[in-house]
Image (cartoon, rainbow, N blue to C red):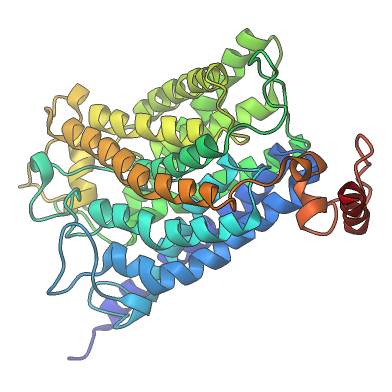
Amino acid sequence: MEVSWEHSVTDSINTIYLLFSAYLVFVMQLGFAMLCAGSVRAKNAMNIMLTNVVDAVVGSISYYLFGFAFAFGDGSSSNPFIGTTFFALKDIPSTSYDYSFFLYQWAFAIAVAGITSGSIAERTQFSAYLVFSFFLSGFVYPIVAHWVWSSSGWLSPSSSDLLFGSGAIDFAGSGVVHLVGAIAGFWGSFIEGPRVGRFDAFGKPVPMRGHNATLVVLGTFLLWFGWFGFNPGSFDKILVAYPNTTDQGNWTSVGRTAVTTTLAGSAAGIATLFGRRFLVGHWDALDVCNGVLGGFVAITSGCSVVEPWAAIVCGFFAAFVLIGLNILALKLNFDDPLEATQLHGGCGAWGLIFTGLFAKEEFVIQVYNSGESSVVRPYGLMMGGGWGLIGAQVIEILVILSWVTVTMGPLFYALHKLQVLRIPVEEEITGLDISSHGGHAYVGHPAEDNHPRFYADYMRMQDNNGD
């Protein structure tokens, strides 16, 4: 049957919108690269930037071969736990998905590995990045995505059999993306242990500040820009009109989602600015940047279903979740150079709880039922919506913690036992750039503490040590 021109135009506009959103999310890889590079010491800058490239290229292949199928493979054999079709994009485009949807979901998948890379920065063998990035992007993350985002997933708010009559609302991935990456990073960092010199003989933390605040701020703003694809783009379609209205549709919700995203990040940034000023006695630009990102992570779950004023509440408390977890991490001698576990894990979990408390009924129906007036769904507990949604949110947190722990924990432990996870102490002190990547990231990088400046110098020093 011939497709009408109105239908063709609608599909074209929706495809353009989704592709543009995918491009914005991919820009976040550049943001991650700049943020990570600025947050480590200069002697490891090239290493961390290369790992961000590896996350993208390795994740692309694994997500193409297996990941998309595990996440969204449906059909006659679909089940609530894992997808079973579309391996290597076989039968794509289908009646459910096309290439633009794959590209958008791929951009999410490679972001997960970027989160984990930050947790184990400055002390990890490069080969370990190749292994965990492939496994995380191709298997661990897609399974969680299937549970929450596939229409057949057992946690999905679009399922025909809703958990607690609600399903878990994790619109753009506070749990699916950020909590998954954070828990994986936690186990990698925990098994490796702290960087050399991070804590003194008495267990007191020794500052190891990032070497370039300019890159951190640049990375933060690039991530902010990309988040406008991450959150609003998760609608997939923009030309969807809501019934019983003359001027509202997904385009209205897309605009609201961009506003709530901005307000949450801004509120978290302000709260961090004054909170850290009170704690350390000065205005700290790097901490504020992480605070802003913590607000974005937290609002990512409920960005489409909460009022703008609630987004400010979300960001405000996210800042103190991050500050508190950073203090706790230091007391426990836990070393995460990017604060990724605390930021993406703590704020991601808070975001899921926040959604269960403040989701508005009207917005939930708009997002998940296209505004149908006859639909009744659970919504935020604090908004009078009962316990169904908050219960599903707690279940999502618990199953993500369990799933990533039983998959990524043994993987990192096996890499550790095989001695392919952490670099030798002398290489860590020298710096990964010179010991593994042929030279420093900066031509004018000074030799610190008589460290070698070129790879050949490093090799001569190794030969002399072996004599």
